[in-house]
Image 1: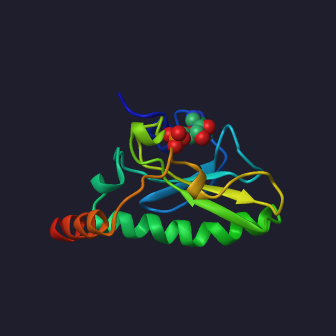
Image 2: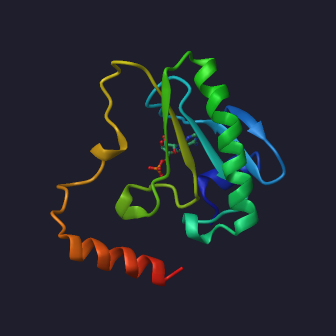
Image 3: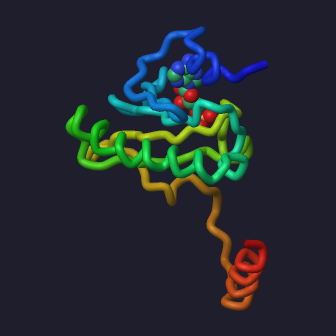
Amino acid sequence: MSTIFSQIVAGDIPARVVYEDETTLAFLDANPLAPGHTLVIPKEEYERLNDVPEDVAADLYATLHRLVPAVEDAVDADASTVAFNNGEAAGQEVPHVHGHIVPRFAGDGGGPIHAIAGEAPDLSDDELDEIAADIDGRI
Ligand code: AMP
């Protein structure tokens, strides 16, 4: 069964589309966290960021890059939080990659990205070195 976002791509359910090209689509979030809250998706269905082929990932970033200033300007925002919930444990509800552009306003009461995680771990220099080396070794 296709995701609700694939149904939007197919035109089977309505959405307030703000941008479309060959590989990507952007539309207003149905439950906006702020006026102008926009979702940017690859038209093809990929669940996680790492499932997206490199060329489509580049297209996705290009669309985000175009949309961010347009969204901010449209609602006269001071800034924006741009983020992906990448996997269920991170809060992803729709298993179809989507970047959120959430317009932000001075004094809007929201937090930074740093507010999303649980208690911050207390890591030693050795542990940080080991993690950095481990990540580097997997690329
Ligand atoms: P996430 O938790 O990152 O998976 O976010 C999914 C987002 O999709 C939520 O912000 C929903 O409000 C939004 N959403 C779900 N269904 C629709 C829809 N039919 N049209 C627009 N946005 C939707």
